[in-house]
Length: 82
Image 1: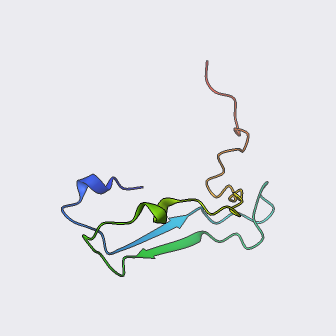
Image 2 (image 1 turned 45 degrees about the horizontal axis):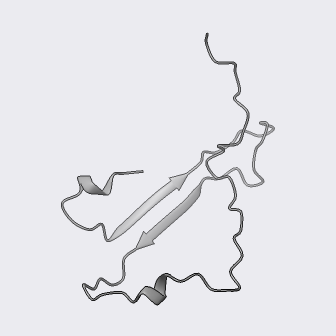
């Protein structure tokens, strides 16, 4: 992930490709084996103040667990070197 402080301005569009293609039969391979392509596009910018109410969590909000796209919870494939 880039450090946005390194840019001279605001990135308008950013594309991230997460994951890699898995070989057939590889342990933990996903169904399609294709990486996930995520594109974010800024469609508007304003210097106006944002009301505090915009940051209030709705009463019926329930947190969902996101899929582990970075495979952080997977066990290491080899033991670390002593």
